[in-house]
Image (tube, rainbow, N blue to C red; front, top):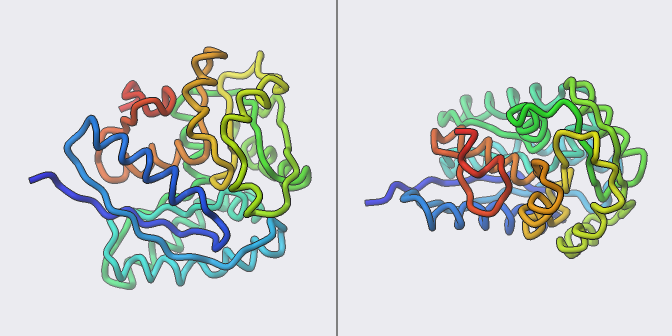
Amino acid sequence: MNKSYRIGQIVPSSNTTMETEIPAMFRAREAVASERFTFHSSRMRMKKVTREELAAMDDESGRCALELSDAQVDVMGYACLIAIMSRGAGYHRQSQRRLHEATIDNGFPTPVISSAGALVEGLATLGAKKVAIITPYMKPLTQMVVDYIQSEGIEVVDSIALEIPDNLEVGRQDPLNLLEIVKRLKWVDADAVVLSACVQMPSLAAIQQVEDSIRLPVVSAATCTTFQMLKALGLAPIVPNAGCLLSGQYT
C-alpha cells in the first residue's frame, strides 16, 4: 500500500494559487514516485496587500496552525511570503518556531515551512550568491523583499515590481506572461532567477520554460516551498518539469 501524507497550508483568505500550484507539484511527483498526498487548508483574512493588512493577517496564523494540527497534517506551509518578510529580517525563523510550538502544545508536533524561509533556503541550496527577482507587489513591498533576501547574504542584482495591489488580481495573472516579463529582467550577473517571489502570483507553467531559455536555475516561492515540504517529510524532493531545484540533483 502506498503511504499517504497530509499537506497542510496556512493561506491568506484571498489566495487562490497555493491550493493549485502546490497540489499540482505533488500530483506530478505521484506520477514518478509511490507516495500519495491529500491537501488541507486554514485561512487568514487578507484582501489588499498592504503592510497593515499583512500584519493583521499574520497575527491569525497561530489559530490556523492549531486548526491544521487538529487534522494531524504531516507538514504545514505558511503560504504568504510578503507577510513574513514585511515583519523584518529573519522573521521566518521566529514565525516557524512559534507555529511549531503551537502544534507541540496541541499534542501533534508538526514541521512548519514558511514560503519566505523556503525561498531563501532554496536559493542557498542552489548556491546562489546573486539573484534577480520578479514580484507582483508595489515598489515599497518589493524593496522589503529585496532587503530581506539580502539580509540572508544573497545579493539582489535586479528586481521587477509589477505593482498589483489587489491580491485577487495577482492570482488572476497568466503565468505565461512571465516568458515576456523576464526579458526585461537584468539576470546576466545572477546565479538564479526568482520568477515569482510571491506564492499568489502563478508561475509554475513558466518555470521550466524560462529555465531552459536562460540556462540559469529558476525558482519561485512555491517551488521552494514544495522542496522544503518534501525534505521535511523525509522524501526525495523530485517534481518533473518544475526547475532544477526539484529535478532530483539536490537530494
